[in-house]
Structures are given as structure tokens and as C-alpha cells.
Amino acid sequence: MAQQDNAPHRDDGVEPIYLSDHDTYRNVDLDRGSCHDWQERKPVSRFEVFQGRTAAFLIFGQSNGANSGAECYTPKHRVFNFNLFDGHCYVAQDPLLGCTESRGNVMTRMADMAIERGLFDSVLLAPIGVGGSRIEEWTPGGVRHRRLQVAIERARERQITFTHLLWHQGESNARADGNGERYAACLRQIHASLRRYGVAAPLFVAQATVCRSPPNEAIRAAQRAVVDPALGIVAGPDTDTIGPEHRFDECHMTASGLVRHAELWTNVLSDYEARA
Image 1: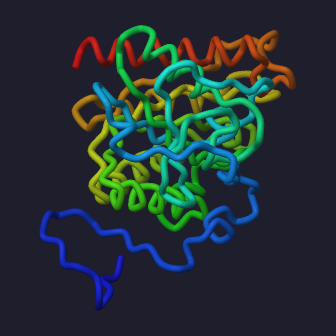
Image 2: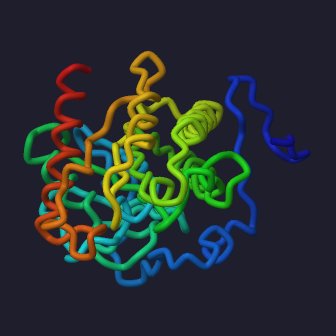
């Protein structure tokens, strides 16, 4: 990325991300219908969010990590929402600000479960997923990659450091062509970009391919193949195990599916935190 004349010099090896006046809701969303109406949300300061052991999750991928669930949920505990589009934090409630769709989000439930299990005292959710997006869209030069850059830089401006990166995507690629080698290569590119931008948090990769189609083993194998704890790439949950009885349209989650999905993520996080 080119150095701007008025940009501060960095000598820490981190590739800088430059925001501009053009990084508005309209230009970052690209007409995908992300949730962004914060007018009736309760804003909170960084100090209010970071109390006790606080996890900050950047959540990206496609619809089952976005607001596509059948029922909305309001967390009972200290769960907050970082908004991609204005860089501010709010008390979390479904639909979460920053990602597409306008229904329930698995991560509000997951956050409550993680707090109830004693993993964290507070959770900050930064969801930026786009329903129906392919992995290629999230790679450098892809139309969704700017969402990653804007979220990272706006969090950095607020002195927020992401502690966990949650990737839930694969259904679109599984239905279209199922090229596992290309999928793995794209995910490694995304991981490398995150590191270049100075994001050191572990990347959790879910196995996710089911959406009105059976599991796609080529994509599932690619999602397993990229896992490398030495690089900070960790196995996420296998959400293909959530059956059709928990999916209202053979793809997206019913209320029971959202609970099961949240439990799978919480189990993975619990195992990871126990080893950390």
C-alpha cells in the first residue's frame, strides 16, 4: 500500500492502513444492507467496555456469522458491539451493527455463554460478515477486503486490540465449485494480510459448507488444512454438524440452531483458553 505524504512513518514492520473521507457506510457497505442504524443504541466508552478480562472478537465471513438467525437476542451480561461504520462501541443487541441481515446473530448468544462459563468478564463483538460472500471477496483486492481494513484501523484509532478472529465462511464456495486448493490459498492470503496489518490474534477457522446442499469435503478439507497453531491459525467449530432440523431454510439457523451454533463456538473457545 502506497505511503501517503501526510501519513506518519512506521518502523515497526506493520503495513499501515489509511482511512479517508470516502470510508462511509455507503462506500464500505457496497449496497449489501449491513446493519448500521445506531440511533437507538446505547453508546459506551472504551473504558466501560474493557473491564476485567475482556475479549474483543472480529467476526467475518458470510451469513451464518452475520444477522441471519431466526430470532433476535439481547445479551444478559457485559456484551458490547463495535460498529465498523463509525468506530464506536454500543451495548450489544440483535441485530448487531456492522454485518449484513437484520435478524439474530449467533455471537450475542456465544458471548453470554462464554461469560457464564467464566472465560471472560466482558466481550466486545465486531461483526463485519457479508451474506453470500465468497472467500475470494475477502482476499487483498477483493470487494470485501476493505471492510477488514476499515474495522482494523477504526479499532486501532480507539485503542482496541482484537483478541480473537472468527472466520465462518465456505457455503458459497462449496455450492459454486468446491475448489479446495484455491480456498486454502485464499485463506492463507487473508491470514497473511491480517499479520501485515499488525493483527496478532489467533484466527479460528470454522468448518462450514452446508447451505441447501450436503457437506463439501473439498472445502472442509481446505478449512482443516490451513490450521497451524504455530502461525496462530486454530480449528474452529464444525458447524456442518448442525442438522436441517435446526435450519429454517436448510441453511440459516432457527432459535435452536443459534443456540447449538453458539455452544460449538463456546466449546472451542473454552478449550483454547484452557490451553493458553
